[in-house]
Structures are given as C-alpha cells and as structure tokens.
Length: 342
Image (cartoon, rainbow, N blue to C red; front, side, top):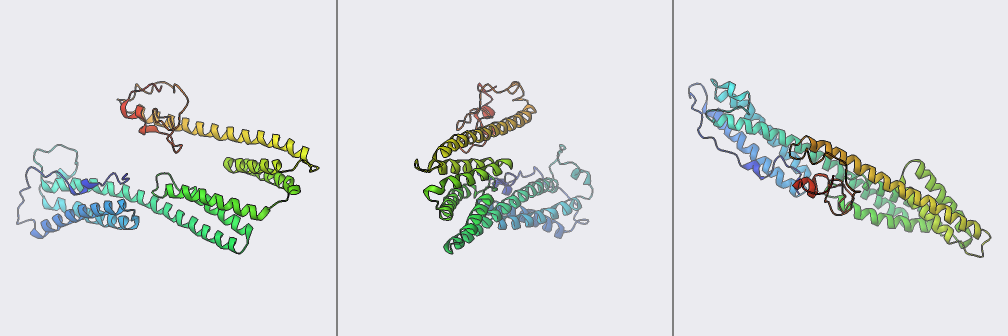
C-alpha cells in the first residue's frame, strides 16, 4: 500500500483553468512565462518519479527526487505573482472563489499544495530510511554472532544474537521490512537457543543449578518490566527443574521449584495479557476521541465497548488484527458506522 498519500499518480494531473490570464507582454517577459511553465512541469514530473521510486522501495532515490521537485515548485511560487503584476491579490488566498481561473494562479496554488505534500512524504521517507539502517545493523550483529559461534566463543555469540534480536524488534510495523524482520527474529531466537545449549550442556545433576540461574535471570528481567524475556527465562527454569532425575538428592526441591516457577510464569503471562488489553483500550479511547470530532460517527461512539477485544476479526475498532495490532479505523464499524460494538 502506498504511504506517500500526498503525491500519488495525481501528481501528473491537474484541472486546467477555464481561461488563461491576459497579460501585457510589454511588462512581463516571455522568458518568465517559459521558466514558470518549465518549473511547474518539471516539479510535477519529479514528484511522480519519486512516487515510483518509493513503490520500488528505493527510498534514497525517492528522497532526492522529492527535494528536486520541491525546489522546482518553489520557483513556481516565486515567478507566478510576477506574471500578473496587476492581480497580486489573487495569490493571497488559494481557497477564495475566483470569477476567472488564471493559469498562473491555478498553478501557484497547486504548487503550494504539492510542496506541503512532498514535505510530509520526505518525513515518512526519513523514517523508512532510519528503520532500514536499523535492519542493516541487526544483520551485522547476526554476522558477528555467526563468527563468534564458529570460533566457539559462546558468550560473545550469545550477546551478539541478543543484540540482533533487540534491534529487529524496534522496526515499526508499517515498515516494508517488518515482515522480514519478524522472520529473522524467529530464526535468531533459534540460533540463540542453540548457542545457550552449547554454553550450558548441563549434566543431569547440574540441572537444578541451571534452573536456579534461569530463575534469577527471570527475576532481573521482570524487575525491568521486560515481560517477554522474563517469561522465556521462567520457562527455561521450569524445564531445567523438570530435567532433574528422580534419583537426584534435590529432586523433591526441584519439583517444588517447578510449581513455584509455574506460578511465576502464569503471573507474567497474565501481566502481558493485561498490558495488551490496556494498550488496546488506550488506542480505542484515542480512536474514539478522534472519531467524536467527525459528525458521522459522533453518535456511534457515545458509550463504552460491549465486549472484550477479539483477535483476527476487525469487526470493532478495539478488536485486534492477526498481527495483534488494534484495528481502529480499519474495522468494519469504523468504515460503515454499523455494528454492535458500543
């Protein structure tokens, strides 16, 4: 889906004015008209080329073309008023109705609009380029992790895989590389698990100690509110304790720890779910506040939600899509205004 909403293929199309300004050739040079027309045509064409480059995910090229387009359209803004020396007031307000549509005024106003749209698009591209740099940084960390693993430097490899995973997790959902980043996270977590297996390789009698160590890591992550990491460490601690054989002197203690750690695991799971529900509710309230300003929806959002959010349906604004993101304006209720949501 195109994110550069301000300059789609419409960049090359505009409403032709009904009449062209009649100017005194003695006071305005033909060269000025030529520069005006050329700057406008080139500005619109560059905007269209930038849109094509963006669709091809060539963000650097799109950014360069947009900057050129803005420069050319700014020339239009500068030249246009000089072409109608006796009608400068027409350029003061592009929204004001005009008895006659002058070509110069029409293109002046279009140039103003396109410049604003192109600048918004530049902001989006800068965000995309930033996320792309993040993805490349994660790949570099993963490459380093592989090298450490080949040299059996397990601790360094573990740290490098963790860095790569954390870096990929910062890529926003709207970025084109988001889906690939999620795949890489799964892959890197598997590699991290293998590395940790090589690091520990505990014997049956040392499983208890490994479980205690994992539990400590779980507590540390929980204190920092890194709930998913804490959940993983509690899971690891449970598995270590379950691996203590019945003949081990600490078998009874290990079984007690399994029950204790499962309770902690369940509490963390509950916290994650509550945080997700709270985040969804905050987003719903934000969407509700936004939609209240729209007349067609003001009466539809007068009450609270009728039910808890559902995943994968997008029937109501507070539902979640298959990726766990709140549906908001993409919901059936938001698009049609009908439904039993509130």
